[in-house]
Image 1 (cartoon, rainbow, N blue to C red):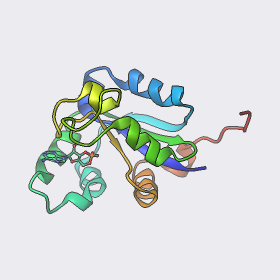
Image 2 (tube, rainbow, N blue to C red):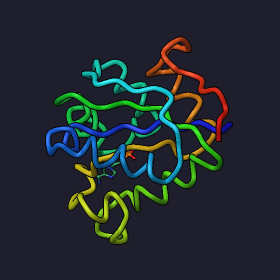
Image 3 (cartoon, rainbow, N blue to C red):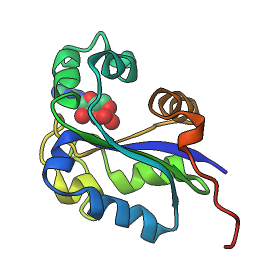
Image 4 (cartoon, helix red, strand yellow):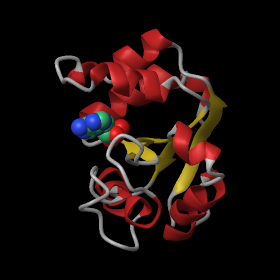
Length: 143
Ligand code: CMP
């Protein structure tokens, strides 16, 4: 079953949106298979956002994601990578539709509440950066 890495960013945690965000993915029918509240070390932030290293906002991005606790998660389900991206809304909240997480709760591209893997390759890479295999659970298939 497909897995993705999602993370409530420091702005989402401080605005008490963890429950709201988790509820949306639960109600959609996806399963939470890993989750932890954590502070991201600078080195992990630089690795996680490595593809943006040359961007002018890279320093700002790393400073922001390490500025307070995040809630890192692994979710499982059919087409969860693409569907979670749809539920999150466009990266820039000025383009994200009402009804999406960013459309409903975010106003700026830097502080856009949530991160989600954009492909199977990045999901595998990001899950591996944030979680050890024994931190992920398996459910017996009842549904
Ligand atoms: P995320 O999905 O976490 O992946 C990269 C992040 O870079 C993105 O969400 C935005 O929060 C951030 N980002 C993109 N463009 C800018 C920008 N112009 N200034 C600051 N942050 C940005």
